Structure formats: C-alpha cells, structure tokens
Image (cartoon, rainbow, N blue to C red; front, side, top):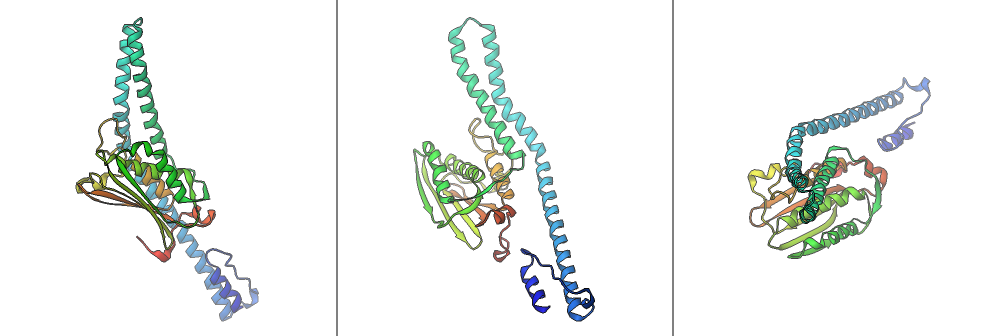
Length: 296
C-alpha cells in the first residue's frame, strides 16, 4: 500500500495518481494518508483550473481595454487611404473619357485598396485568438527563411545570423514566422541609413531564446511602455500600421512565451523573444514553461 501511494505521488500531476485501496482499510493510518493525498490532489486540480480561468479572464479584459484604441486606430488608418481613393474615383467620374487620367489613377486605386486589405488582415490577426497547430520543426531554419523573405529590405544592412539550436522543437510554424517577420521588420525600419542586424538563438533550461539586435535609432524611454499597444507607431504615414508588435505580443502570450525590450536612443534596440522549449506537441500545446526556471 505504501508503494502504491508513493507511485501515485510520483505520478502527480502528469500521470494517473489514483490509489486503489480496500474500503475496509481506509480508516487506518495508511488509509487516512491515501484519502488525504487524493483530497489534496483534487484541491490542487481545482486551484489550477481556477487559475487558468482567471488568466483567461485577465487576458480578455486586457483585449477589451484595447478596444477603444483599436476603434480610433481603425478609423485613422483606413480613412487615410480611403480619402485618396474617393478623390481618385470622383475625378475619374468627372472625366470619364480621359484615358490618360484613368491610367494614372488605376494603379493608385490598386495601391490604396491593398493598403486597406493589409490593415484589415493585421486587425484580424490581432483580434482573434489563434488556432495554434504545433509541429516539430527546425526553428533556426524557419528564421533563415524569414530573413530570406526580408532580403530585399537589407540592402544597406549587414545581417548576422548566430543560430545555435541543435534540435527541433514543437511550435506553431505560422505564428513563429509572423513573430520573426514583425520583429525583424521593426528592426530594419529602425535603420533607414543602414546598420547591423544580429539574430541569435539558444536554449536556456526550459526556454528557447531568440534575440534580435539592431544598431538603429533606438526607442525613447518615455514611449517604451507603448510599443506593444495596437496602432502605436513612430513611423511616417504609410510605413506601418502600428499593429506588428501588438500582434507579436498577442501571439507570444497565446504560445506561453514572452518578449522583452532593451533600447538606447541613438545606439539600437534588443528584442528578446522567449518560448517554451517543448519537445512534444502535447507539452507545447499547454504553453507552459517549466517551474524549474522560475519567473522571468
């Protein structure tokens, strides 16, 4: 009986921790230990369920608090290209026979519509909870692919890849691609006159650590707390929606990860992305980092 209890205690919480015992023996000291252990496990399970529910409610409340910002941002971001589109259409209606004018305005209409489509796609990504699909992949290879896609933006920038993950991990590939591209683009846009971009990876205990370092303009201390807010941007009109980092932050929360920023104005910025180092899909889906590493 002691061995069965010891095995059940070792199994908790990942495996079956039920201890079968003769009901007639439950009143002795060992029986009371078994009953107490089962009751303790049940309370712990209930506490974990309550904690999970509280975290979900807190995340929902945070999303709702951003609703006002989103509404104002949508109006501003869409009204800019929409105003230009309406002017083009009005002018074309006034001169229906002017083919030269039409040929000049049609590309502008196309550009404006694509801009609105891009804004709406980012809004959808921010607003909905991602249906994450975990699979075992080479994260270093995914990062290489992302920066190959961004190669056209790197003409004045020296890219250094220091990728050191020696095994594959379970992660949502599309979410990871979006996180890397969003963060990479932010770093590239901070270096309009060129500079150096360094991307490194490593595993530290139960975490995958991805570091993206640029030598760009840096972030002023007074706006640092706003950079993950939806629609917050310091870029010129038309260069960004201010949703990239907000989407990145949201995706990382859903994946059980986090992101930290260090920056010095005039010298550059370091984004540190942390994700659970999960070797199995089931562990990745839980999105929890081992308690052995503690709070970061």
